[in-house]
Amino acid sequence: MANWTITATTIYCDSVEDEVTLIIKNDGTVQCTGYSRYSKPTGEIVSLMKIKSKQAGKQLECEGLECSRITQYHDKLMAEEGGEIGRSTGSE
Image: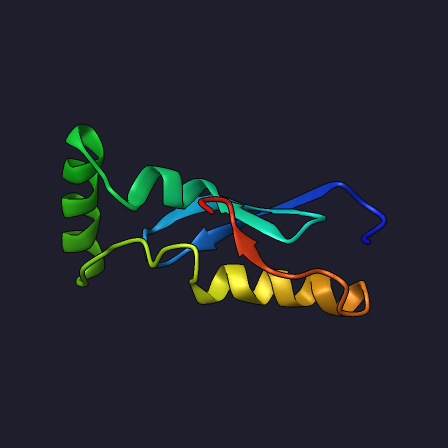
């Protein structure tokens, strides 16, 4: 088991053009603040995403909890811990 309970890092996510925080618990559970905000946007967030998409010149949308950013962060932690941490999403 990992020598920590929870760890997090804030990154810039170019899929939603915003900073998000990736959270990994020592049991391998992953969470992303961008997922909770952008995976099923409503109201003001939908409007914001349309504006940001137009400015970025591409369709912006959350890639979900299986995105490469989460996977890379999880894999980095797993390598540091010697491969002890399994991966699961916080939605299971």
